[in-house]
Amino acid sequence: MEELINIFVKSIFIDNMVFAYFLGMCSYLAVSKTVKTSVGLGLAVIFVLVITVPVDYLLTEYVLGPGALSWLGESYKDIDLSFLSFIMFIAIIASMVQLVEMIVEKFAPALYASLGIFLPLIAVNCAILGGSLFMQEREYTSVAQATSFAFGSGIGWFLAIVGIAAIREKIKYSQVPAPLRGLGITFIVTGLMGIAFMSFMGIKL
Amino acid sequence: MFSKKNLKLLSNPLGDDNPITVQVLGVCSALAVTVKVEPAIVMGISVMVVTAMANLIVSLLRNTIPSRIRIIVQLVIVAALVIVVDQVLKAFAYDVSKQLSVFVGLIITNCIIMGRLEAFALGNKPWASFLDGIGNGAGYGMILIIIAVVRELFGAGSITLPGIGEIRIVPQVLYDMGYSNNGLMILPPMALIVVGIIIWVQRSRNTDLIESN
Image 1 (cartoon, helix red, strand yellow):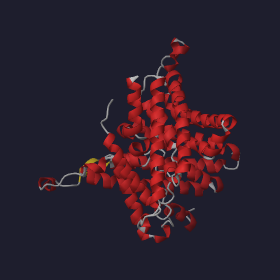
Image 2 (image 1 turned 135 degrees about the horizontal axis):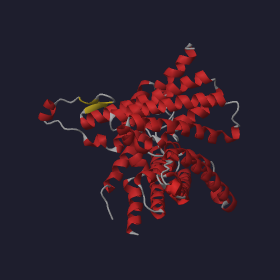
Image 3 (image 1 turned 30 degrees about the horizontal axis):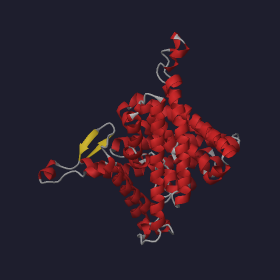
Image 4 (image 1 turned 135 degrees about the vertical axis):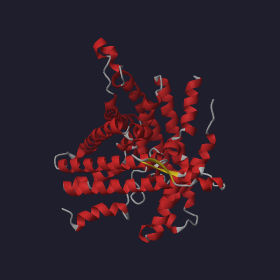
């Protein structure tokens, strides 16, 4: 349990997807003009991460990893399919997003309407594929750990995009030098937020 | 073959139509690999190869891909190309491949590639699409290398080139006189601030790019 909380806190603050690894920057920059839309996108990212990362974990563990196919019998235990992981992960993510979209549309029409276009776009958000690839690289040992990592990183991404959206709403009223307006100042503010988040470094539960 | 129009496809992304600073595509995996110059160069070349080949293949297939399922077809083509690049890097440049870690895989979701496929390759002939891919990959690589040179020069006082290794730029004399490396440059947030400054410089020189707010 302690291990899970540790992974959770670490992936929100210390290994924050945006500030430490720059994942999902494209949608982070494009959709952070107002707080309302960024909350929608942030929720959708949390949602999809929590679903895809555990599925990809199971896939690595039982199909793709070195020796993962040994449950099929002795002769399969030398097979290592890990070179296929990119294509499998992206296929899983694309189909999961489609599935989530259909389920949400059916059972929670209000949520579906508020997420709108963001849900399908998430399939090509690097934060999602990055979550799966980091999960594979860091070698988590159970589904619970993978889920906790996914949930934590989702929340970290959510905090980052809502924070920058709030700052951008206020920055409209300030005198930014003309060449920095829009994109330039957003980069610099993100950098400053990143420095602020670095003060969490070294926290260990 | 290299008419004026085609040369423009190559040169535009290097300047006024740069994928990172103007189109805002592909920032995702760009910044994390710029602590040293070597991985930045390798990453730039990898993205250039994938963008050019994906543009070429999609452009060849553009009349046969049903538009309803085009995203997934594009993803599969890109993923297959990235697997090839990843395996080549693992075989011939293992150290760099380790440093790039997950960011090679993240080329799949790099918005430059999807963006160029959607905006250019689906509506243009193969040769033009190929050049567009090379141009955009080069524009991306150029920004990566500029950021990496600034960060490594001020952060570690050296430049690392592939095949040559580390070259010390800041002489020992300066260190003896009390100069020290700026450790902040190596940390992730400085990459963002360096990009911000590049955008600032570019837009001060070319005022057409300034956003209305």
